[in-house]
Length: 147
Image (cartoon, rainbow, N blue to C red; front, side, top):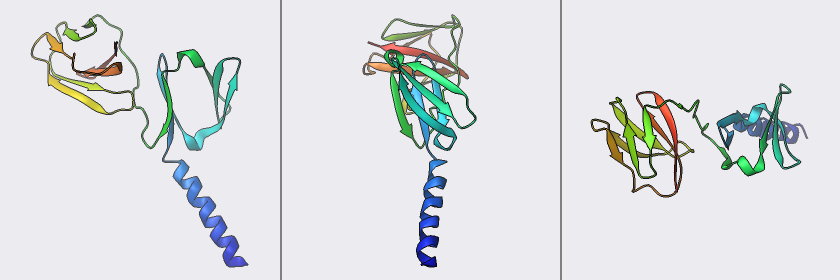
């Protein structure tokens, strides 16, 4: 009987340890990642998703504003999105104003989908499929939407 309880305890402990390795990623107007070990509950209230963490803080997201919500072994990792005028997006071409360096384009999940040198002021990204992307140039991140 002791062996059974030890095995059950070990299995429960391993499931708890695995929870530390996963994240809830919510992509709406901003991108937020929550370690599953820090989640207390996720509820649906009056057209909102409410994420409550174990420290008691809650964040509410309008369901209509959520672009993507998923569990992953990787945090979304998009800390902040710049809104300055050093980059312009017309739906297929990225225009860089006075910026040079490496241009990297990521899906919200963190997958790199394009990487180019920014020696020119215009970069053609018409080959991208429809969706939301994050463009990183010299440590600055910009959100673009391909329609």
